[in-house]
Image 1 (cartoon, rainbow, N blue to C red):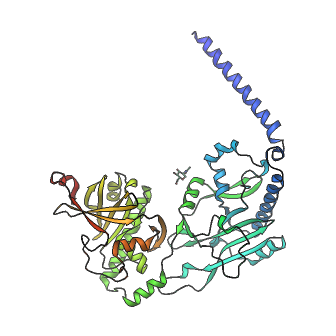
Image 2 (cartoon, rainbow, N blue to C red; image 1 turned 90 degrees about the vertical axis):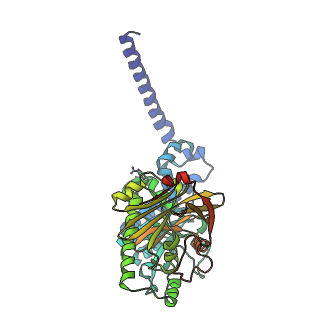
Image 3 (spheres, rainbow, N blue to C red; image 1 turned 180 degrees about the vertical axis):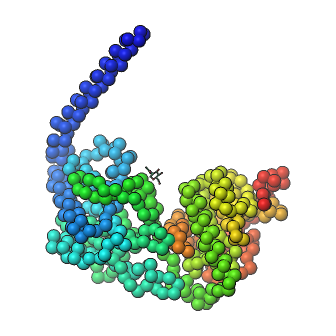
Length: 458
Ligand SMILES: *[C@@H]1O[C@H](CO)[C@@H](O)[C@H](O)[C@H]1NC(C)=O
C-alpha cells in the first residue's frame, strides 16, 4: 500500500475514534450522570437510604473536622471500591451516583483515629450527642504500660461507635507502640452494654487486636466529602486482612519468672542484648526481601512463656514458608554482616540455613506443607541423618518481642506444645534437637553422593 494511503487511513481512524469518544462523553453526561439513576435502577427507597447515610457521614465528618480528629477512612468495603481492581468492575455495580464510594450497602462506615495525635476531648462526644448521634465508647486496658513488672490498670478509649438513623460509624483508636507500629485493641462488650446497639459481627475492626505499619495518607474528596485515605490502598487492605495481634501473656510470664527467676548474670544480659540486635537485623533484612517470617522453636517459646528471650538458648530461631524462599536470601544476610554457618538440605526437602553474628546463631527453618500439617527438617552433619519436626497447621499473627513487631503462629499454644510437649512450661537446659522435641521423627539418611551439596558447613 502506498505511503499516502496509510496516513489517510490512520487519520480517518483517529478522527472516527475521537468522534466516538466525544459521543460517549456526551451520552454519559446527558443520559447517565443527569439521570436520577436509583429511581430506575434500584429498588424503591434506595435513594433515600443512601442519601441518609451520606448526610450522616457529612455530619460526622464536619464534627470530626471541628474537633480536629486525626482520622482516615479505614472502611474495607469503601477502600476496596476505591482500589484499582474495583474501579475496573465499577460499571457492573448499581450504585447511587452521589454516594458511590462511601455508601457501600453496609450499615457501617469505619474510620481510624491516630490516637497519639489527638488530645482526648469529651466535647466531641457531647457535640455528637447534640447532633443526634447515639454513642458507645469502648475502653480497655492500656497495653503500653503493661510489662513484666507492672500490669496496666489504666483504661484507654479503644473504639467509638456513633449511631444515627441506624447507621453506625466506627472510630478505631490506633496507638503507637514501642516496636514502631500502630496498634488497636479488641472490641469487647462489658456486661451492661446494649448488644443490639450495632451489628457487631459486621464490624471490620475489633474481633481481635490489630497491628499496622503507619500508613501514608492523602486527603481526597469522596462523594463530595473531604476525607483522608491510605495512599497505598492495596497495602493497607492487605495489612488489614493480616493484622491480628496477640498480646504477650504478661500475667503468666510473671508467674513463670517467679518460679524460675531470669538469669541476670553479665553473660545472660549480654546474650539477650546480642539476640535482640540479631533479631532486629533479621527482621530488617527479610522485610527488604518481603519474606514473612515467624518466631520458631526456643525463640517462640521464650515469647510465649516469658515474654522475652530464653537466656540459655544461645540462638535465635525463625521459621519461613518454603514457598517464600528466594535464592538471594543468603547474599542479603551476608550483606547485612552475617556469615553463613551451615546450609542443610535443598529447596525441595528439609532446607535449613544457619548464620552467625557476634557469636549468636540465627537458625532459619523452612517449613513445608503436607496435607493437614506443616513440617521442617533437620540434618545431622556428621551422619547425614535426616529428621522431621511436625506441627499442626497454623496461621500467622503479629506480636511484640524486644521492641519489635514480629509474627508468631496464632495457635501458639498448639505450636509450642507440639514442639516441647505438655511440659513446655518447665525449663529444660539440656536439650537434644534430635531426640528431645515431642514432634521429631527420623526421616532417613541423605544419599552419600549428595552430601557435598546438601550438607554444607562453614
Ligand atoms: C503498594 O503496596 C504494595 C504492597 O506492599 C506494593 O507492592 C506496591 O508497589 C505499592 N504501590 C505503590 C504505588 O507504592
